[in-house]
Image (cartoon, rainbow, N blue to C red; front, top):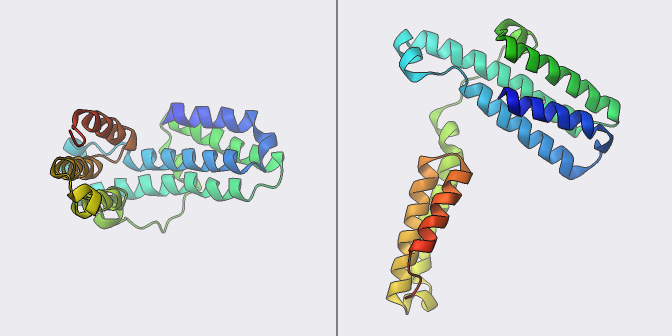
Length: 194
C-alpha cells in the first residue's frame, strides 16, 4: 500500500498541470480506490484478529474503514479540481497519509476520518465477485442454446465448460488479473469446435 501510495503521490505531483484531463483524473481516482480497499484489509490477520473476539474484530475493521474513507474522500477532491493548486492540496494530504502509514501512526490516520462509517454487509463485500460470476454462469447456460452453437455439440460443450470455469474463477478471486490469466490458459486448452 505504501508503495502504491508513493507512486500515486509522485504521479500527482508530476502531472498536476493535467488536472483537467479526464483520463488522468479517472486513473488517479481508480488508484485511490485500490489503496482504500488495501487499507480496509490491512491488519486483518484472520488467525490473530478473530481469536481476539468479535468486538475487537469489529472495532479494528471499523477503524480501517474510517481510514479508507479518508482516501476515498480525495477522489471527489480530484474530480472537482479546478487548478494545479487543487491537485497539490490532495498531493500534500496524501503525502501526510503516506508518512503516517510508514510510521504506523493510526491516530494520525484517524484524525480526519469520519466517525459514522458503517460496516458493509457480506453481500456488499461479495458483489464485485458475484456480478461477473453471474454473467459468466448465464453465458454458460444460454450461449450453448444459440442455434449456430447448438448445431455443434463439441462447441456447445466447450463454451459451457469455459464459461462455467470463468464463473468459478471470478467468484473465487477478486483480482481480475488472476482471473484473466486463468481464463486465458483455460481458453487455450479448450478445443473450440474441434
